[in-house]
Image 1: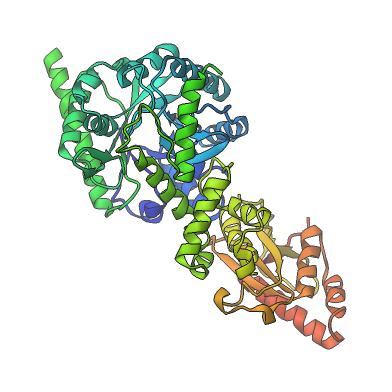
Image 2: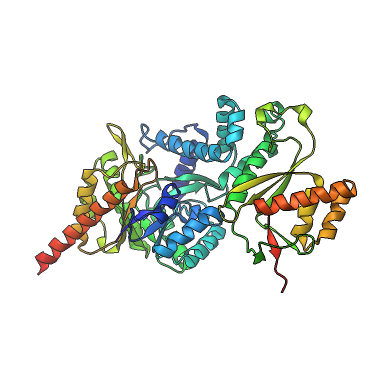
Length: 276
Length: 250
């Protein structure tokens, strides 16, 4: 399965043409909760046609603030009403001291943060009555470093009963920005917990910094890392193409999705052959 | 909370920096790159608010606009988890702080409220719309008001003219309705007089027959003028979908 992030930018064309053929679509619940009218009409038609995956923005699982229980109630209702197959969120914080920041900030890589975040993931799962997936985010600076990034992620997965959304582009971006080997990082993850993969483009803005923009096409080294990941996984996992800015013609998006599907099937067929 | 005070403080200091732009040294961050967070977040806030208030951002100078965004984001704790909904909080910020630009632009608050009203009506959740007939006799059949509507009053004609051309001499009593056209989702503005406001209010609060509508208009005009004005308004409203049609009586 290869899906696409459903964007208002191409919502109308998406429904009226057959150029884009995803296996599923993904939205951020925050962009659709409480929305009616024109966009609701298009969204309803889209989810009648395609399975829905969701990827949250504002849960702020790593926040020092209390969870927003009112928002969680709205979220639960949305996920149930739309029959969302997956709900994922970011391993980051986007709210602090009761103020939303609307972007993903790094959680301190500390033991106490592990316990704090893991207990919140478990609480959210209890409230939503579903297992959620947590995504390793891109970050441009660590905040506090008692643990390595990999130790931090694995410690959370050790304490929280959630799944892992593996954003291969984020691993690539982080490995460049913080100078480590992305394959070693992926080797070190509990891959049996991966239930969803994100792929996207990024922008290199300095010799030592890449920003995770979702505004460009996926580059070859990230495709290579995706192929490597699929080989290690050895099983079919839904993959999403994220494109949030500089949206190109739908043909280009479909070509990227086709390429992802090709890498996936090629890797899985080879593995099957090897087993036989 | 299982988070240590140290971890909390790191997060709090980073968040405060992103909001204010005032950097307080953090011992373990990458000093060269941490400012990217402030830049990225500020762009999100600016983009969201600029999209919601294009008329206001045109009215203010770029320095005034930038200062407004900076003051808002540093001085106000955004409570909405939905970024598209966050710009509404700018109105309360400007009003509660009696923001200095109100003195220079007395219509500022009304312009913000007017612009947000359009966003609100465009995005509002769908209302349950009863079945209705498209054809009928408005002198006999009861009319169905579009429930996806907001009516608002202004001292300045912000719904009629370019804000930069409106002065103190334009001050008066103005009313407008904004409703959502059911098929396209477009927001349609209607300039209203007091009888129209009362008529919409009456329809909103319950069934109102033609005679009752006429009585509202009689308060403001002679019998003939009132009837002509009412008939004209009903016909135009049926066309624009401010009135959706004729109620089906079971």
